[in-house]
Image (cartoon, rainbow, N blue to C red):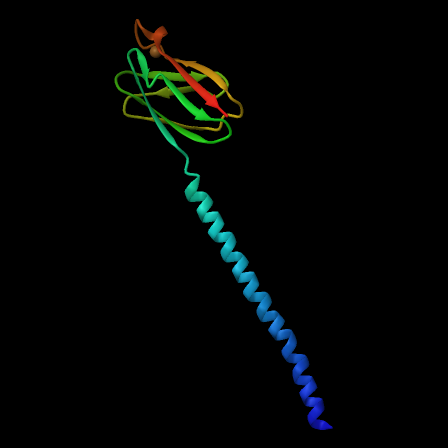
Amino acid sequence: MKATNTQSKAKHTQAPSIYRLIYVIALIAAMLLIMLSLSNGYAGEKTPVITIHARRYKFVPAEITVAAGKPVKLIFVSDDVGHGISVDGLFSDLNIIPGKPQVVVITPSKAGDFTGECSRYCGSGHERMTFLVHVVE
Ligand SMILES: [Cu+2]
């Protein structure tokens, strides 16, 4: 009688520890899967970078195309004197000083054409310095 009692006790204490082990293994597997999917997503969704040069009297390139809902990093570099850039509906008044690139990350919410222009007087052709952002779905 005594032996049977201890056996059944042992079974009772063993069963929960096996379930606990399975639970811990499942938890670790789930965490690994989450970490793997997060790292893949991060690597796959790198923010694209577009460098735009400002010089008398144009932006190069003068037009860019970006995707709605996706972040994009714009770097504005002056090749000569101080310029500025504002694009209605996207960002305003970056001061582009020679030797000091200006960085802005935008995530356009809707498709369309957004026009910008130089926002610092830089000489007689200043008015010609326009910039266009095409946002596509
Ligand atoms: Cu200007």
